[in-house]
Length: 288
Image (cartoon, rainbow, N blue to C red; front, side, top):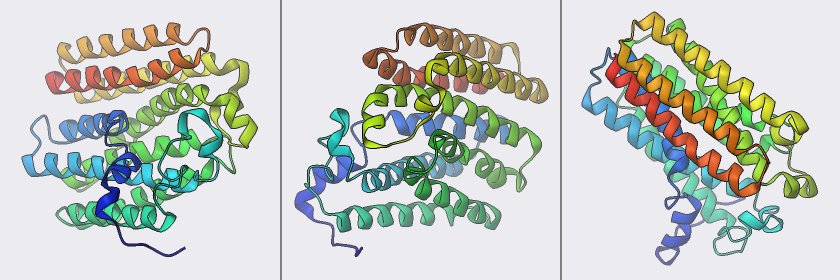
C-alpha cells in the first residue's frame, strides 16, 4: 500500500476521518493524562508540558481514528452507524488515509521530542498500541483491553516527563483507567453488537454476552477502588472526594441507563463517561 498526496479539496473528509466533529474520544483520552500530570507535578504542572500533552492527545486520538477506519474500510459499509465514513464510501483513497495517519504521528513525535529522552522512548509504546488496536478486533474478543492500554499510556508518559521515573502510583492509575476504558468501550460495542456478529468483528460486548452489564459494573467498581487508593497515597484533601463522589454517582446513573441494552441508551451512556472523567479531574485539581 503506497502513501498518496493529501488533497486540499478533501479537507472535510480528512476532518471526518480524524473525528474532529466528535471530540468525545479526545476528551476520554485527555482526562486521565491530565489527572496524572497534576498528580506528578504536585498540582502545578508546567504550562509547556500541559500544552504538549493536550496537543499530543488530540493528534494521537486523531491518528487512532484514521488507522481504525483504514483497518475497518471493508466492513464499515455493512454497519449502519459507520456506512458513511469517508473510506467506507470511497470519498478518500487508502493511500491518503495512510498519509494522514503518518502526518499525525510525525507531528505527535515532534511534540514528544521537547520532553526528556525517557519519555521519548515511552512514546514508541503509544505508537505501537495506537497502530495495532484497530486490527485486534479480528483476532481477539478483547480489543477493548488494547484500547484501554492505549488510552492509559499517557499516564506513565506524564510521570516520566515530570519526575523522570514511573512510580507504583502511576501504574495503579494506569490500571484504573484501563478498567474504566474497558467498561465504557464495552457500552460502545453494545451499540454495534448485532452488526459486529454478522460481519465477524469481535468485542467484549460479544464475549461478555448476557453478563455484559454485570461485568461493566464490576469494572467500574474496581476503577473507583483504584482511584481511592491513589488518592489515599497522595493525601488528597476532602475536595477530591467530592469529585470522586460525583463521578461514582454518575457511573451508577449510567449503569441504570444501560439496563435494557437499548442501542441509543448505550451510546448515550458511553458519551456521558466524559462527565465521569471531568468530575474526577476537578477532584484531582482541587484535592492535590
